Amino acid sequence: MSGKLCMSDPLFDAGIQLMVEQIVNLSITDYINTFVYFKKHQDLDPDSLPMMERRILEKECEHFFLQEYEAMTGKDGERIMRMLKEEGKKRRSYVNRKWASLICV
Image 1 (cartoon, rainbow, N blue to C red):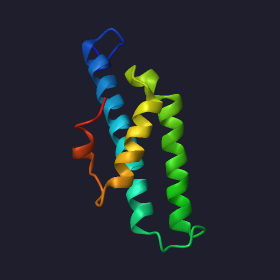
Image 2 (image 1 turned 90 degrees about the vertical axis):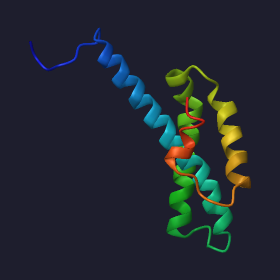
Image 3 (image 1 turned 120 degrees about the vertical axis):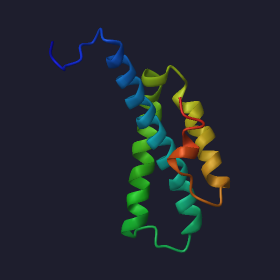
């Protein structure tokens, strides 16, 4: 017997589910924290490298929520994206992945 998993193995499904949860969790964390960063660093030049990096991260997260989130979770990515954006804009502190896991998938 080999140590490889096949697609019919329950461990394969559990591994895929864990991977999906981690991808979603990281996306939630990054998206919320992007808006917290914008709020905390309003004095930075919009063309500075840190601001540009955050804008790129924002766009990558939006692409994920609009294109891939529903396929991974079966839930409306646009709705969750709007909810997370509002959460990020009203927060005063960054969220960690443990906190984000409470609203994950």
